[in-house]
Amino acid sequence: RRGKPVYYTVYSDEVTVEITVSISVSVTLQPDWSQIFRGEKITVRCEIQGGGDTEWDYEWKTPQSTSHQTHVNYWTLSVSESSSGNYMCRGRNRRDSYSSTHDAVTLRVSDTKSNQISSSVLTVSPSWLSPGASVSLRCEVEHPSAGWRFYWYKTVPKLSDRLYRYELLPGSDSGTEEDSYMVHGQTHTAGYVCRAGRGEPVFYTEHSKPTFVWSGASLTVSPDRVQHFTSDSVSLSCEGNSTEWRVRRFPEDSYLSLCSDWGTMTGSTCNISGLNSSAVYWCESGSGQFTNSVNITGHNDDIILVSPVLPVTEGTSVTLGCKLRRENVVSNVFFYQNDKLIQNDTRVELIISAVLKSDQGFYRCEVQTDSLIRTLTSPQSWMAVKCEYD
Image (cartoon, rainbow, N blue to C red; front, side):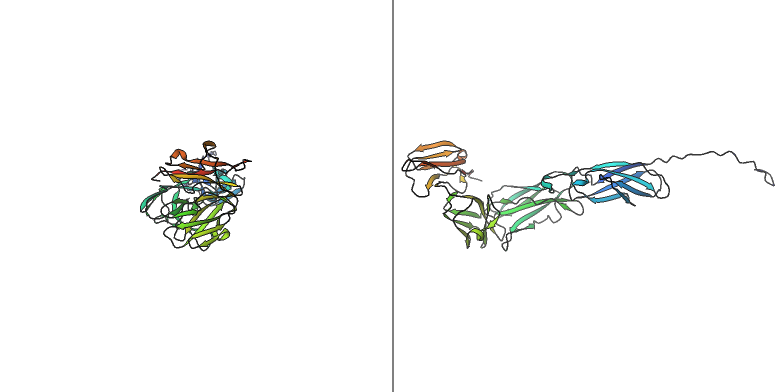
């Protein structure tokens, strides 16, 4: 234009200008752990680069091909086995019609055995100790990955019922970053468990199986032998710094039970009139003490092996024998260790004057009856040998 009045030219031809907006999208998992377990919470986050101050809506596509929309760039979900797969995100401009490109991330949910969550395994060192010594606990997650904190507990029997309670050890309320824990000044036998946790809210593994540190408290058996006839009466005595004990057993073919279910508890002694099963026995106190466990077997056979219940210390003497249900053993007794004949003479007992570690193993005996009509063979039992300082 120019002059007064203004003189205008005609409009120019139209020119089209194309503006290309460069937009990219990335999808990430938070936390970025190598293994995710059923029940844990995970956040899928969608980051869009480009587009200036564009306000976005987010569209998610799951492994099951279902769509989920949010106004924020993240989506938190509790995972299950069906959560494994690709998660895709697309951003949609709230004011314009164009959208960002897709991107995807793969989530893998660990499939643990028997469809259970991850478990913990506790080890202790040493397992036998002198009163007042320190104990080292170490907790391992069955499927190791990042982010775990560790929680430490003392196992305490609830004498009012058949259960246990777990008491947190000092300093482990919020878990520890280290997978080890020291218990100082251990004065009596105790049981410990651990578990691991991570995330917010905290996802916990299963508790570990109880692991015991033996010191002081003990369980003794009378008569002192592993094998018994089913008609025998047996006494199990708990000894230690406690006034209240209970005896438990775990049979091969049944469930965990108390002395009151199959015997009579008198003070700290459980009296059994007849062993109708083979089982592991131990004592527990309300103060959290546990004794050693013993394996006792009941038999309908006419012959049993006489061998010690507790481990034999190296260098000490031990005597093994045979016992018949209806008569005394006179002679002609054969003794076997790990199915190898080690004594075959007129002696009725096997005497080892100074036990060695090599004497550990399975033992059984054979007896020829007075009438020589038949040979009777006992069941076999394990004889354990321990070091003098164990």
